[in-house]
Image (cartoon, rainbow, N blue to C red; front, top):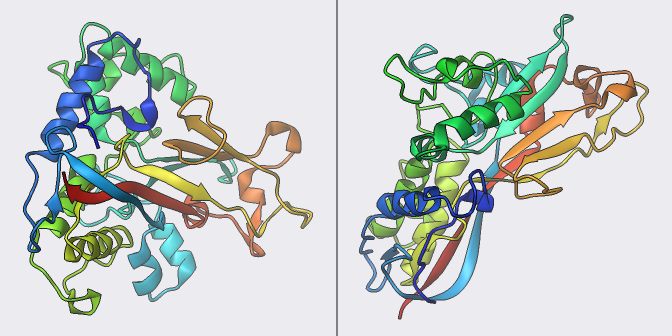
Length: 333
């Protein structure tokens, strides 16, 4: 496989004109996150940077996991309803108490409610802070474009540039429109929902100590995401493969399923999913996905049921989503 000359943006987003220097800057960002690569325990194995290491690709491995926090479902003694209630806690340690972050599967969501406290919309994202920080830094138009996108994505033309920045004028990922009043990209940092964290997890699994089989693995996190990545990557490393993330590198919403969703009259719910990013997409993979009943239906998301149980929390829908990272495996050329 020829060396990658410029890493693509996630989902090949074109948030700035094609000739913008941002796309070279994003390449540099990914090149830095991938680093020089690692050497695995098996000769020939490791995690590689496709911009610097020529590998003959043998195949693609899609790593898929459930979007709702697995640990809440498996360890919450009060049952599933309490797990879903706790699953609404999204944040950074700067905005929520330490240890209270629950949206830790590389999927974050924001639940909107009406005056009657019924859910009207649930917005899901797998967009990473690295992308938005890089976009904001890009000159001359990055900061302006970030403001435009916030206004578009949140449907609020009154959002100001000052509300997105720190006192020094730097982009603030913990601004109110990405925390208490909406969602644009990841903010959870315990454990970190970042592209860097995902790539480091894969690199560590490829370059870490060898185990004979998955039975010998220990110390795996209680999440769905981390064991999926570690088990798959170590399995490939045992076979002597080099592994990396496939282009365009990113974390994606891989699928969604509304089987068992019903309207207030008991009939099957309609197709109320809407892919927002990438623009123009009608199906997976997605970076931003909205679940919302059209106004003409006469009811809202909170009036629907899943398996006969009313939708009270956004996490009930998050459980029906999968998250994915595309990987490549091959041998050094």
